[in-house]
Amino acid sequence: MINLTTFSSPEAAGAGVIYVVGDIHGRLDLLRSIEDLIAADIESGTGKSPLICYLGDYVDRGPQSAEVIEWLSSRRPGRVKRVFLKGNHEDRMLAFLADPAAHGPAWLQYGGRDAFESYQIDLPAAPNTRDWDDARTELARRLPGSHADFLSNLRVAFRWRAYLMVHAGLDPDFSLEQQPQRALMWIRDPFLKSERDWGMRVVHGHVMVEEPVFRPNRINIDTGAWRTGRLTCLVLGDGVPRILQTGPQPASQRVDAIGGAGS
Image 1: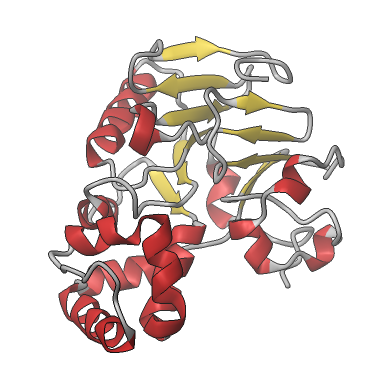
Image 2: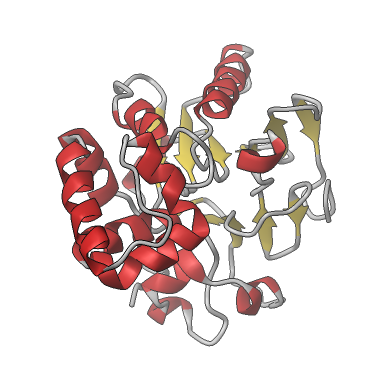
């Protein structure tokens, strides 16, 4: 359990603007494009004391899981602080490394084969227990230490002012003082259907939407980048929330604080 009422994010104290990046899923091209848009936004003078928060799901489905982790884990500290959250796909990847036979089949079903291929590992069409053990050994051998450190140090939440960033959401059956950590990475319908006022607005991904969804209690920015080519970044500051987005949509559009695109 995690107590979100006392959960602190030290980096948030001095941040004047937060750039929240949605689910990447192995699309290094889109990650680089959205970071270019963020850099341009910062240079335009709108991003004072900026911080980038990545919502997780860096791996699977897209073709460059390993390259995305390499890109993110090798970024050198600069004036732009960065916070990396854990998505359910990273959680599954770590679970596989701990118990390959138990978690391999489910990982494969939800895009894990693409992650294996990005690390130059070929899997049989229908792996058996021995295949999973061999795949785990090979992945552990090919996984750079920097990638392993990156995965093991991912966070499950980040708080800034009246916003809480998590990968998936919160469990309405539990209080903020006793939130199941797994829910922050995995929950779907109970959170999406809830109108509960959490006392802060939850920013999340995890469930693909055509355009960002704005609700009074939450904002969903997972626009299915691996499939649509639209990777979304939510910009939070002193004014009205804004959207930066790759792909065929306008690079930047204003949205109101509750309605907005995709509501």
